[in-house]
Image (cartoon, rainbow, N blue to C red; front, side, top):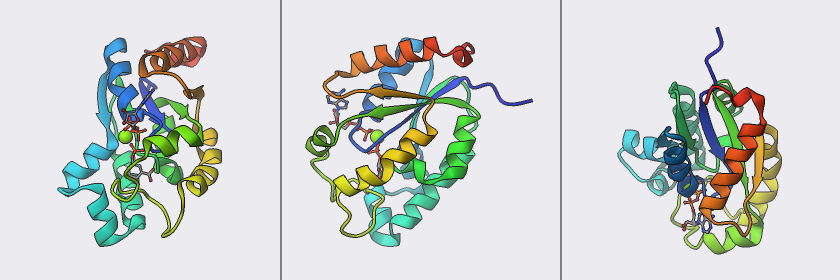
Length: 176
Ligand SMILES: Nc1ncnc2c1ncn2[C@@H]1O[C@H](COP(=O)(O)OP(=O)(O)O)[C@@H](O)[C@H]1O
Ligand SMILES: O=C(O)C1=C[C@@H](OP(=O)(O)O)[C@@H](O)[C@H](O)C1
Ligand SMILES: [Mg+2]
């Protein structure tokens, strides 16, 4: 029998607010919360930027995919890293267990929020800009999302409200 989709997974660009909205949403819905970036840093015993610096961005992508595939929780809000959508296997695994919500934030806001791009362990080819990452990833976020929430100009509480309303409209979320 298929696992019940009792989780909510947040996807989106770095700076879109996944790790900010996630804990609030979990509290509001009485769900537990986890952040896959944190799982990776705990398992690896090093920061994401250190992984990229020492072993390259493809290694972080591989570790992220492994972390996604190992997730087998229920009744959680799960904030992923912005690069999670590079793993088709990982996203397929998540979609069997979760409603996937894309936090859609415009490039100008993202650029303003990402004020430490050299230190946050971004998964990108050398020299790739945030604008190029955004263009490359937008189709992937859209592909894997059950729900897209346009967050530009909204505070985290307003984003939570839109997510809850969007999921409530979707009958497949009745398990929550
Ligand atoms: N809705 C929001 N409005 C304003 N600032 C936000 C909002 N969501 C997140 N932020 C800020 O943007 C930055 C990145 O947020 P974060 O939750 O870490 O994003 P992500 O996990 O998607 O990379 C943080 O400084 C956070 O405080
Ligand atoms: O988008 C990316 O390339 C990444 C985003 C980060 O997470 P956030 O999206 O939470 O910032 C983290 O997973 C890693 O540094 C790679
Ligand atoms: Mg985050």
